[in-house]
Length: 437
Ligand code: GUN
Ligand code: ZN
Image (cartoon, rainbow, N blue to C red; front, side):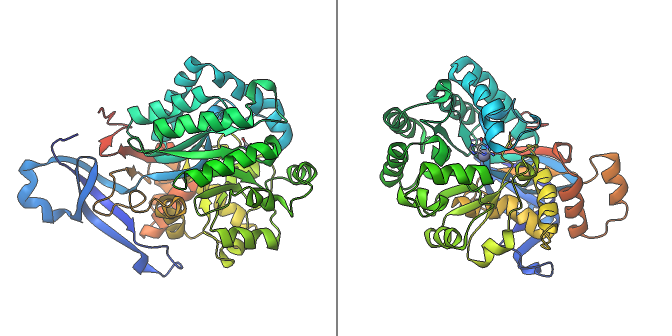
């Protein structure tokens, strides 16, 4: 696709590395008046706006002042068939799955329903500034087809996979070890590496897979080492106890996945709330990525993620929404709740680290930092434009904000989709601008 080069003007923030603390100003670059030059879906040049003065007559200029531009947000754990499960009352994990989630996911066996919901799912991501997500589809191949087709229509860098589940759920959401293997093979052949799509091998969790199915998942991971693997680990005490009964020979919950070849640097492990020291060491050894899902962990009453403890053991943690266990699509609201979860443990999430986390940090956790997560020249032009005065309460607070860090913290604690003025996907404005291919 070739088009006239676009120049975005506004303030801009880019991360070079993870900020080591509040005083670490070497980890980011901030531009008071920035130009981001976009051509063919990629960022070509980032510089003070004045540098572009001689070329302005040849560029399509979009002025986003006084807003703040940065890389698009990355959500590394979300469930596409749970768009109508979000905000379901009163249950903890296993009851919540059986009462609300499995029956709802059964509806995604209908390709027409899956296609309609895929449009609405991606609309929610765009409105909240999320440009990449690692996504669980339902067990049905049709749901993954609908997910990837809609992502392709929007040219979004998306990771997804059908969940594999062959026991402990209603028949309408079960596959078999063999059918899951065959469906995943077909989906990988069709979608992985097509455009901006990545396939994630997605055994839902140990409880809903037989050993034979986890073996099939491990075989797929070995055959396709560039695919991600995503699953859930150690979210809830009843879940951990049932897993121990179903896998009596495993050392522990993490050992179940380890024994089936499912732990590696491309493995994303949702939750990781109640790990033993042995499990933490096993994840660190494998380079697997724990994924902190704060709104979900609070909503389902699951527990508190020990970010500092896991990091001290060498783990690289991601942060995600986990919609529909999670209660918001917004990565800003996810930071808000994440801040509070860490406060309860005497850990405080500095705003520079927070915004690094939902951009470059999650890209590093996904192994995609060469393409997304920054506004470095050469990377894909997935960009959010943020308005820290989007609501009256935010505007009132901003009257007393004097630094970038204070502004970021207002966005982190008070922001949601209303604070996202625009979302660019591969260079096209997809929210207010309603960009078309
Ligand atoms: N564990 C297995 N499936 C799920 C799910 O859909 N959501 C959450 N939060 N945990 C799970
Ligand atoms: Zn989940």
